[in-house]
Image: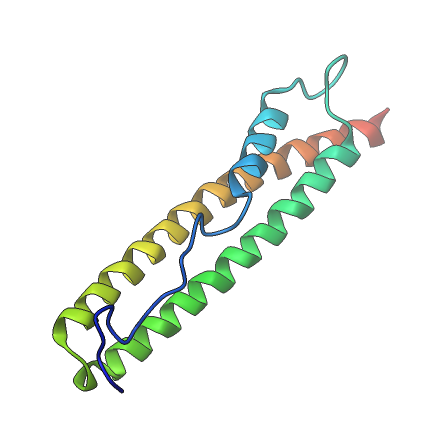
Length: 129
């Protein structure tokens, strides 16, 4: 493996960990701010659709975390073959990406939990009516 000006461990340019992740979180937060029943309450279908989308995003974040962790292992394993500067730079980048993914996943899981509670209450109210 040959070390070049950009280092041997080039990462593709990346934006947010998951494309479009903030609008989904905003949508969940908006559903949580709405009344649970009566006028202005979201439909149970809207809640369930958003939960499904949220769970899909959580799975995608978990997959991204796994890819980052696997890459961290590859960089560590191949560290003796390239310059220390290249290895250090990629380890920093990967660590930052892993921290970002961890934070996004924790935030998303909290929102999904809260929305799941709302869904349970709505279902119970519908059964009682």
